[in-house]
Length: 321
Image (cartoon, rainbow, N blue to C red; front, top):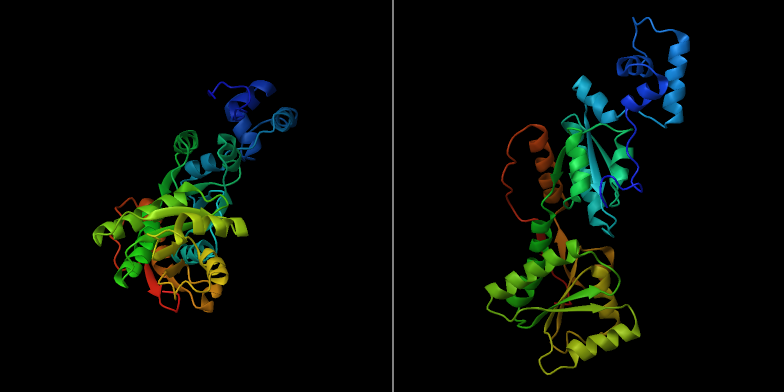
């Protein structure tokens, strides 16, 4: 849709209020900001307030911050994804780190409508917007137009390493045909594509065939598909990288003889359910939070982010692989 599309509501400005009230923009600013030392009659002030109310006008919080030069808010815009338990822990650590540096972290879910950004900026004045994936171009342009800096953290590399860790462990323990098992319900490509890249990279490094990818519903039909596509074939996968511990736990509960058949199973996240005997890959929460914080602070301080060191994931070995 074009910017002139009538379905997209244009943001009301102080110029609109000034025109409706028959006054200057300066008068609108003086009235709505309660600026002292101005000789504005109560009749005029009431006309301005009535026009602002009729037009549903609210001064931009970002504009106020730009005028004052002060804002300590970092706004995290989260996509409508099922992020599981890992990211709340990461953002809790990130919040603590930003607080130590004098900033406040706010989190907000986001849809693809540019109006969402416009409405949000009426009430919050972020010095930085932090996202887990690049924003749609129109939303990004709207933020840049207000002077707000935007940082998209390198989630791809982190998720890719997690997939690499699963496949590399399985390959290192003798499994030569690797598969990536994804739940049948919707999982965004932004969460699966980097995992697949990491698994493929590990297989290539070990000289193994490219991994097989399969979606499986949590149902008898899903298990039947798993047998048809993987387990009952002569060249069955011998190592399974599950998308989550829940996927791995479902499979392990239904196929209790995987280990006896020479099939290794590795989950992801080291959730409590993994204690049933699942080998899994645990995310280094502190490392992820440090990376997020460093990217944010580097942008806020107008410098290049420091290079990351150390692993962001590690394997927790149990009976399943």
